[in-house]
Every structure is written in structure tokens, then in C-alpha cells.
Length: 76
Image (cartoon, rainbow, N blue to C red; front, side):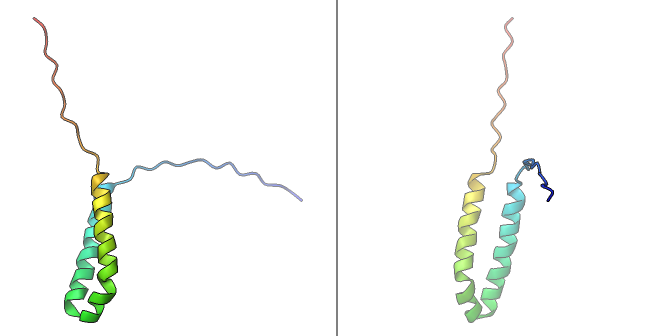
């Protein structure tokens, strides 16, 4: 019997929060449009819409903010 050893490397990828928020907005728009067309779908989609709005708030807080660049004053 042959033993095979695997070495696993961790791949770190940058998370694009703007893209995630855009996708959440698109999903929210689709579900709200469906809810406008049918009262039954409104009941079905209500929980999902609440969760999507809370996810959007979470990811909006994680957006990187750019700190203002400080200018150095030269002496002399």
C-alpha cells in the first residue's frame, strides 16, 4: 500500500467588498420586484430580504476607508 502525502498551501485572496455589496443589491432588487408582483412571494421573500439587508450593513462596515494623506511641512 502506497501512502500519498499532500502539502496544502493556503491561498489568501483579497475580498472585493464593493462587488459583494453590488451583488447583494442586485439580489435585493430582484426579490423586491418579485414581491411587488405577488403577495405570496412577498411572504416567502420577506426573511431573505431582511437577511440581505443585514448582510449589506455588515459588508458596508468592512469597506476599507482611505485615510487622508498628511502633508509634511518642510522647514526652511
